[in-house]
Image (cartoon, rainbow, N blue to C red; front, side, top):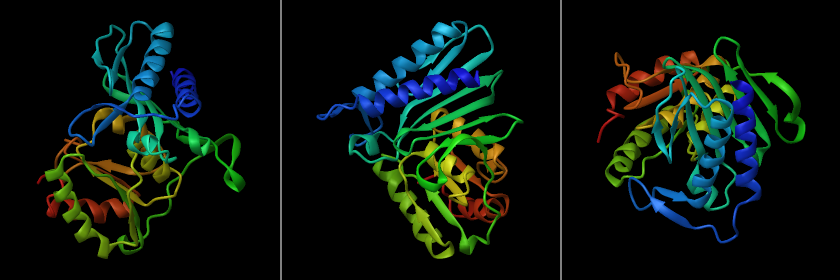
Length: 268
């Protein structure tokens, strides 16, 4: 399944990178007028689902654009064909292809392909997280094991987050940022959760949180981050990660999660 995910992500990444029309525009919206879908989101998902169906026709698929299809094998693929669509629309490099495989509801394989950075991140449950590619001195033709940074105090932590496309939710999220910013080294908003989680695994961030992520936003990146040593959770005492997703190095997680709970980071 790892090899299938890697190849599907590579093909989709090439399609998105090399096939982007010069006049790319919005073809549809989802939760709000600024939550966009492009023709390339749809094309990339069709490529991925077609490739997987060719090799594993009995598997289920959950895709951001195509929804949920049933299978008979106990395996489900969770696909975000283009995480960071707004970045892609504007020609920014922070977008990725995210593919995960679940067996009986547990994520066992995750791949995040970041074409504009020439990087591929992968993980298999229990076997660690790895990175291949990159540019400059950080480039690697072979797979290199990933480890999160050692946990700094929260005051020295670099934290990433993301924002919803619904105005009321964004307003509440801005209030959380206002409270958090004086307590940390800085905050980053990259625009693609899968890329943020891969960067957490690679030691480029100390933590990440976001409200209202979907399974396709989280599945591959979460496994990669956890296999690199991150802690993952939701609200304090609650399992519902779709309300609030918190991933960080262990020490930062211990400090960050209760603050987000105290500030009500999961609701308006």
